[in-house]
Length: 64
Image (tube, rainbow, N blue to C red):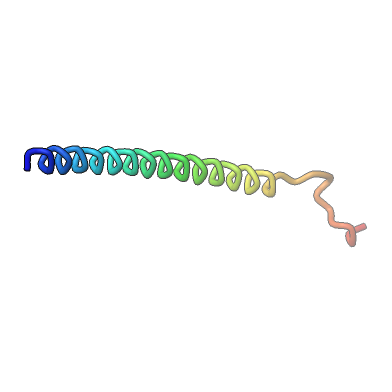
């Protein structure tokens, strides 16, 4: 009977370790996704900023 209790206790502690690992992996994944979103936002802002710059003399090809 005591052996069963020890095995159950060991199994329960193993589950919490697995849950801890899963929680850590999920937190890491969220961190990675957040960083990715920030990079994408920065890239989008950079592209939008480039569109606002005008090159040339301000005349279109049809103007003479």
